[in-house]
Image (cartoon, rainbow, N blue to C red; front, side, top):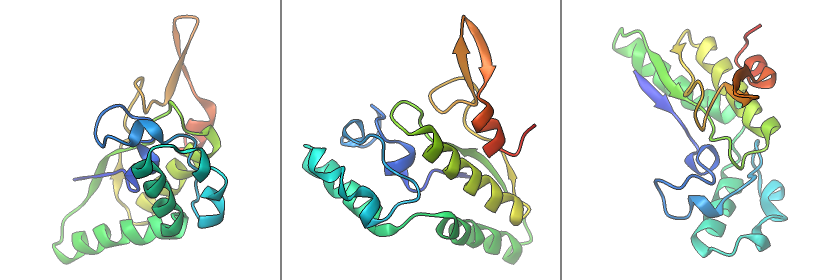
Length: 151
């Protein structure tokens, strides 16, 4: 059983817990590249956050990189004859572009399914949620449901 939040600077951008510069990261792009983050770097006033965003761009996170990361877990499971589940993955909603958030969710879910790894997204109705609240009702976010392969 494992969690998947890599890269944390993307999945936890704007979070007020954890690393002290996360609140200063917002609207990071996914996939990442040096070009994709270049325009936002001058607007990030926290030096540590700016360095983290620059590093995130340089790491070039995309579907292939996520697949390679998940493949490592799958390889470990095969080596030890153990079935795996990823019981947490997701992106904090507050300051993530929905299309980037859902692309990352789709890429993780797709990789997990490719390697026959069970999964559960974190979470249902909190900061990483599958649902949103409208008129005091919980409503499934259709783009997130699509990213999860749900009808």
